[in-house]
Amino acid sequence: MVLEKVSFANVPEENSSIVVGVYEGGRLASNAHRIDDSLLEIIKKNISVRKFEGKFGDSLSFVSDSEIYNNIILIGLGKKDTKLTEVQFEKLGAKIFCAASFLDETVSVLLSKDDFSTSSEDFLLRLGFGSLLKSWSFDKYKTKNESKQRLRQIVLISDNASELAQKFNSFQKLSEGIFLAREVISEPANVIYPETLAQRAKEELTPLGVEVDILETEKMQELGMHALLGVGQGSIHSPRLAVLRWNGSSNKNDQPVAFVGKGVTFDSGGISIKPDDGMHEMRYDMAGSGVVLGLMKAIASNKLPVNVVGIMALVENMPSGSAQRPGDVIKSMSGQTIEIMSTDAEGRLILADALWYAQEKYNPKAIIDLATLTGAIVVALGHEFAGLFSNCDDLADQIKLSAIETGEKVWRMPLTDHFDKSIDSDIADMMNLSKRGTRAGGTTAAQFLQRFVNGKKWAHIDIAGVETCKDNLFICANNGATGFGVHLLYDLLEKNYIK
Image: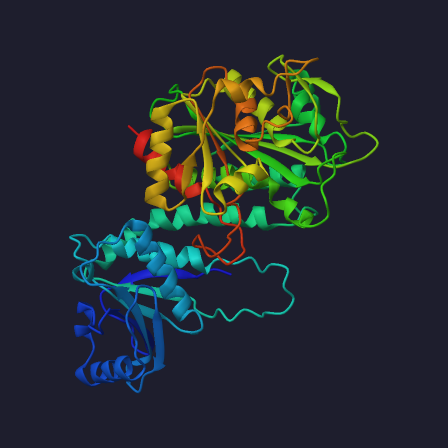
């Protein structure tokens, strides 16, 4: 379910409900002057009698006896003159949606730039964006409608409604990319597996002008992608490599930016099988590829003037008589050999070949991979931050800035020679796990990936702790897929790669 519409208007609709801002201390926001005096008195009485304090994001709802407005929702704005960031405006929009979600009618929001000491009404775009992001939920397989969400439309009131509506179009399309990522990440593994996810990419992106190529087993064998193929050889679902190309730059020969996503559509651990507690969540192990898919949709929908390549490395990791074994040695596309210490350290194997392919085929100016790669990063950073690893300070700083501005937080982690040496193998070039006692599993996994970067400007984002929402840390349905990375990387492109 998702809001059907976020719109902008000069005046509130009649026979609707309204949202009015209240500062700490009970003072009404400036746009309350649009309300008649008798209704203002009712609002002030409710603030007083029900002791509404106006703390940021708090809400209070009551039925109106007005002939114009059916319900009144008060939303707390916190202390007056507090400067809010774009992310805070989005969170306020999410709070407004939650407060109004039970209403089966249009809700008009009465907040102005004067309420926030800002010179622009663009904050309304962020309110609308936040409300839209919060409204999404995955209820496709519910046979009974148990949701209390009834709200269909939020209207943001402004004297510049038509201008804001035009600007909001890009946010609408960005949200659709985020929702696509959330949807495919949420699907069960009997619906989304390598073939179907690759096909979904083609169906979603081809009409938008994205060139989609799907590499199947025979082609990957020709290319020497034995690291990727080895992970999938125990499954009845054969691997795929989905290659998504958007040529938006005026210079079609301009080097692209490449995004590579881990797409293990289900990770049993293979022969090194996982315990059953929590294994059902391993359908989320393709979140990196889901984010790449959603990002490419947002880029193409908004026709960003930049060349981009998205790579989705798609496998299912299952135990069987044909599955890869601990102790096997395989040769990657790069020619480097890998000793398999655990078949549950599979994500780095498929990314090894996907990273090398992206470089060899497209010579990108920068390459960024996303993966639910390690449980160790969750131990280190919890569910609030993704782990960021990079061989380039400038690229890392750009990602960190976009993380701050989008609220998709990252924390940079170390890469060192000590950790790199810990993955040296006695019988091959490297192992897919570090030597016993090394610890730092997030870093040693990143060190493994770096061996397949070949000097390119590169960043690795480990999203294992943030692909689903825990503790209401992101603007999405509680315990639902976040789509973490779509907004972050879209912002990165806008700020740094569009001429």
